[in-house]
Image (tube, rainbow, N blue to C red; front, side):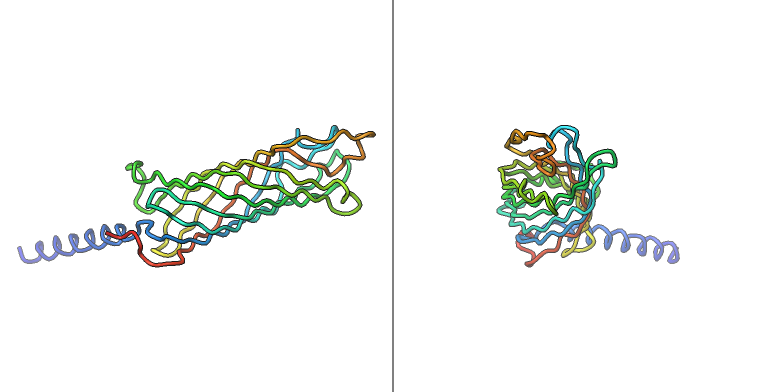
Length: 212
C-alpha cells in the first residue's frame, strides 16, 4: 500500500509541476524585441510588363519592438528588408525593398482555449512606408509609397523570456507604376504587394508585468 501511495504521490507531483510551469508561461511581458528571417513573394502585377521576380526570394529580415497596453492589445513598430531577383525568363534586375510600419497588435489567445499552453497567436496590422531601390544601373527607378500591412504570428514559448515564432504577412502597396516608354525603361520599378513568411525569436525586455 505504501508503495502505491508513493507512486501516486510521485505522479501527482510531476503533474503539478508541469501545470504550474505551464501557467508561468503566460505572455506577461510589456515590452518585447522581435527578430525574424525568412522568404518573400512579390506579386507579378507590381512590375512593368514582361518583368517579374522569382516566386520565392531570400532574404526577408524583420526587426521590431512591441509594447503591450493590456494583455490582449498593444502596438508595434517594425522594420523590414526584402531582396527580389528577376525570374529566369525576364531581364535581369535586383531590388531592395525596405519598409517601416506602425502596427496595432491583438492577442486573442485567451479566447482560443483549444490551443496548448505554450502556443499563442498574435494578429497585427497597420500603415507604413515602402522604399523600393533597384540595384546597379536601374537606380533611377526607385520609388517611395504608403503601404498597409496585415499579418498573423504563432508563438511557442520556450520560457518566460523567449519564444520562437512564425509570421505570415501581406504588405499592400498604395501606389501605381509610372508609364514608361519604352517599357524596358521601367525595369526594376515595383509598386505591388509582398507576401512574407518569416521565422524568428521574441525576447521579453521587462519582467512579469501582468502576473496575477
